[in-house]
Length: 126
Image (cartoon, rainbow, N blue to C red):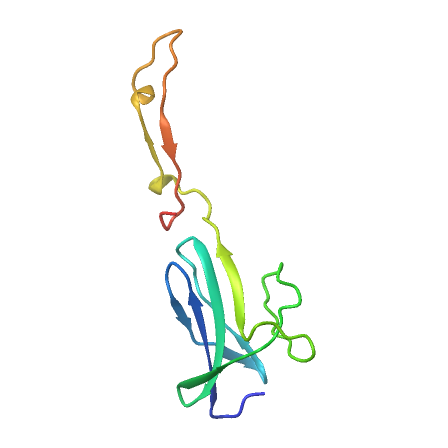
């Protein structure tokens, strides 16, 4: 449990860096909310400190990395201090951000192959 002066910070570093301020839900439990907008590999680091001076990474282990909840379990099983690897994949295709181009969009001849190129993107352009 954190003392009243202890504070947490979560750093999510990758193609873009996000700093997240966890907020308490119950004693000893915190939630972090963020929206990833760029695809790629990220490293999540959880830091603890006092009065906005972050000094140490929290050590622990996520027992089930396949789910959406990252439980930080401390004890005999310890992972690398506070570092977790995450991959952000593109979201659902957004028609407004996708593009089609090529001669096959406006001209075709019977018996001749026509070509068009479709580039799909999510709402963030990934």
